[in-house]
Length: 143
Image 1: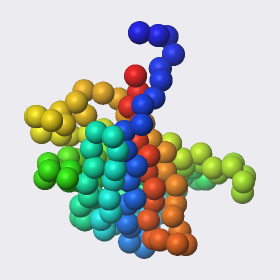
Image 2: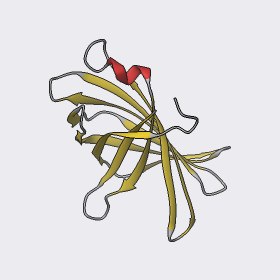
Image 3: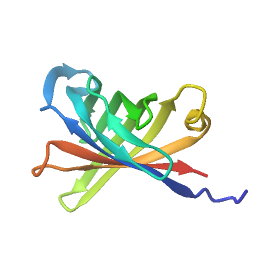
Image 4: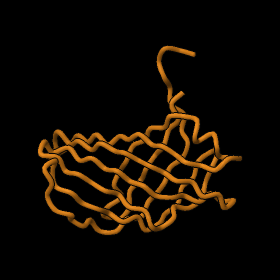
């Protein structure tokens, strides 16, 4: 194993989202929630759909950084349901710079996809607005 980790592409998802709803101010910042409506994902080892019913809880901190905490399910083409927990940091130090990276955890049943329970995953996030009320999420396995 080398000293420097490398990343391997796992899948790309387009996740359809509802409008952002404010949950009010907290001592840590302004709180929001965005419901997850569905979508699809595709990669070399798994593909399928994003199930509706999840949500992305967001915190806009006083320093301008946004913390996203999304919990939702995906269903593979063969019917397996996998839980996704995606924690994202979004920082825009200027209008032409955007950092949106995440740590992703999966909870998959035993079988074909249980390898997802045994690795570290990272991702990035890109808004699809205004063409679609969705986000594009790319997931990578750290090796």
